[in-house]
Image (cartoon, rainbow, N blue to C red; front, side, top):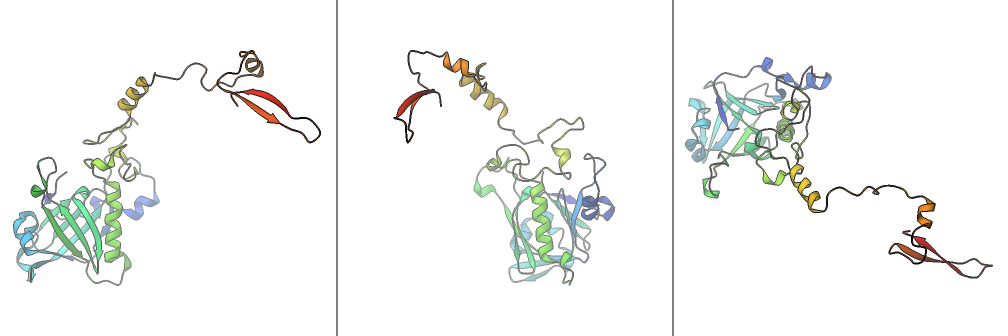
Length: 270
């Protein structure tokens, strides 16, 4: 999923509040509203390098006439931030323009003073041929000053991290294995992994390892175990094995008693 533009402001009724989501069992995991993990009660500001901003028309649309330049950086005010379970939304109330950022495009997020630093990958990995084709943009989101801890940069940072766990990158080769292995399959993203008929399904673009490859490996080893595998043998069966000699699994155990001479006896496979 690519970074996309949004022309209308997000609204609270478009989402399920995280508190409400946690208090009740969803009636369905399919076609449900995204869960809202964080929303700025007052507009935040963005800071980005002016050189990067001029090269990115999508982000430039957020700036408008109210943006201010300070050295090499441009500060963009009046940004509503919505951290949802499906994407990070940035909407400018000044220019009536916004962006939807899928979490796999966020390659780095960290706390930087009173701001949250994001490094965004702006390139399509399917079309970029080498490292020079990959474009990145570093962005600082600074929430408005507030005494409320749930409006702090720390709260924004945690919300983005939680949602990244729900939206791992399906093209990341280091995340080989079952979908959800790098994060969690929860009620928020269940619809991506389980069909309405209850059958497990892999989301588009995700490769599931193990099924065919494991079958081929087992076939190469000779297939399933024999009919005696896992069966406990009785004493009569053990005593009836090759009385005249010790098999490969036989062992001699030397036992001794304080009052008796040393003796030896053979066990089979023990």
